[in-house]
View 1 (spheres, rainbow, N blue to C red):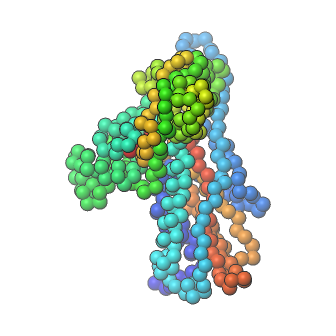
View 2 (view 1 turned 90 degrees about the horizontal axis):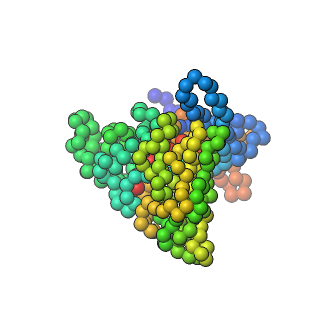
View 3 (view 1 turned 45 degrees about the vertical axis):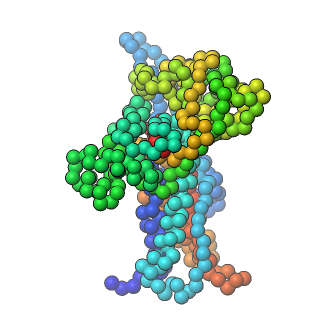
Length: 411
């Protein structure tokens, strides 16, 4: 086979191939690609509106019962730019693509892939309220993963081959050990033994990632209660509200950061409902804190949570709005550090990447797009330092479109 010259497009294509092979979570979620950023004059920071599925109520009998159709959407801002830069000389261009890839592209793209995956993961998990397991305890029991699947079932997530479970190395090792030999498939048992990987089972496609973030439960303190009845939405006219500023009291007085963004809690007698039938699932609805919360001198605190409890209409998600003085129970002991393993349906999250504009008058410039991921490569001469500088850039954004179709498995 003839040698392939190191053109900018060859370099970009190879770099993107390596990047794609190294991402884990980002490769399993829904990915969208937007080439509008490549147009001349486009600016970083474009916001996309992504429509969410409409929900309806069902009438009984022959008399029509008209309802307002409320379309909801979510803003997704493509504004995160990450990249890796280095300098190399013309001698390096005399290498074969294999040599160049192994010496430069592989370590660079592996690092960029880890940064991309971690960034998306750390940003997305704080939108997910569903959680199973015990913070501070490595999951390994089959029941834990079945309960995570139960959460998705209760919120009507499709049961198909698009459910993924991502574990950190400790959870992966404990799960393989805890569940070894439970499957009848000799191929899967062999994979567990030979590769140390879970593979497929319990309704999930299992994957391991070193980029699973950790969450630290807030310091808590006091006996937190809901302060004021019927906080949330009654769902009149099929109204939909994404979040709620929940007024609470009973916290330790004048204490900083009682709750941390990403903390999960339940409220007494507020049960989740199936999104289709609106019948109680029998499980308390879980809510996730959106920003750090401190208490005032009287132990009061206003906590921004998602989802907003909605007690009626097409978007009903709870059996009843919280009662005054309803007890709040936070998942996990105070200040517990817990890896956030996560199970999700592919359509729960989306990652959008976009073409960056190719600069004019440079030594080299190319971009490539594959499987919803776009990467740009640019090389130019630094006349001041007599070097050739190259850079790889990726522009992306992400959002949790259906966070109820995901479940955290605390570790």
